[in-house]
Every structure is written in C-alpha cells, then in structure tokens.
Length: 208
Image 1 (spheres, rainbow, N blue to C red):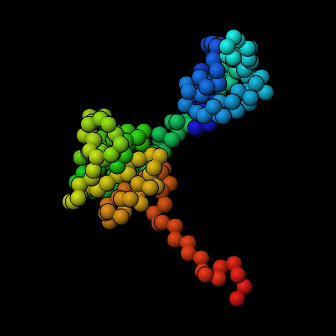
Image 2: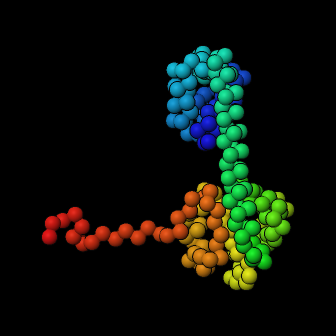
Image 3: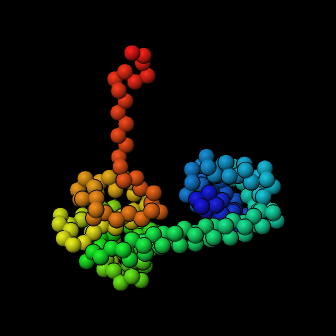
C-alpha cells in the first residue's frame, strides 16, 4: 500500500508539468531525494513520464498518456487496499470490544488506527476514557481528551493499543508496567507478545 501511495503522490506532483528539481519533488511527496530519483528513472524507462531541461538546473517532468492511465490505476488500487485495511482493522477492534466487558478503555497512541478504534468503540457503545500519547501536542483528538501519561491504577479499565509506527515497542513498554491481560492488541498490528530471548551457549558454533 505504501508503494502505491508514493507512486500516486509522485504522479500527482508532476502532472501539472511545472519546473521542479528532484529536491522539490522529494519534499512534496515526503520521500528521500534518492527515492525521488529512483521513481523518476523507473517511470522514464517505462515511458510513463518525460523530462525537458529548464534554466537554473531545473527540469519539467510531465506525464505521457500512458502515465495518466497508470495514475488512474494506482488511485483505484490504493483506494481498494486502503478500504481492505480499514475493514480488517475495524473487524479486529469489533471482535476485541464485543468480547471484552471492561468499564472503559484508554487508547494508547494517536494514529489512523486510533481513529478506527474510536469508531469501533462508538458502534459497540464502549466508553473511551482518554487517549494516551506523550508526543501529541493537542489536548483533544476527535473530541476525546489526550493525556501524556496513563493512570497508575487502571481499576476496571483496560488499555487498547492504537499506536501504529511503534506498536511493538509500545507493547513491550506497557507490559513492563501493567499485567499483559489488561493490554488489548488488534491482530492487524502484528505485535509479538514475547520478547526475543535467544541466548547462545558459550560453545555455540564450536566443536567440543
């Protein structure tokens, strides 16, 4: 999904055929200059874009008819993949909340997954107490309070892991503070419940 997203953004950035540098393109689509250069080379080779040199070391990149067709295809694929991901995450959270009878929930981490968890909680009439995110600058997210720290005593409440980019590290952090039974994790996050514990023997790889 990320690959299609970058390629779609690349096509969108150059479809107006404006003078741009690779640095400008990389900034607009939020990738490295190396990635932008790789995309340019890839689509030049496929004949999906063309390039014309402009003054001051700038270039005009523009889409060929094949490029416009490929952009439409990427949009369709990205939407289909996004909807598939949304349905998967939503089903995971619905399954968790339907089978859990806690009084309320702290969501851990502001993200797109957090938004889906909120929607699922609303659909299942579950209480969200607050969202915990030490890096979030606002005081509210989708009308729910955001706090920097979780409470020392959860009482009859549980934590629903909703961070996206650091979900594994966040899970390991949480189970150091709380009993793992009070940490709810959706399957879509692919979080391992056990820390790696490989300890080779002193004579590992050596003959006795």
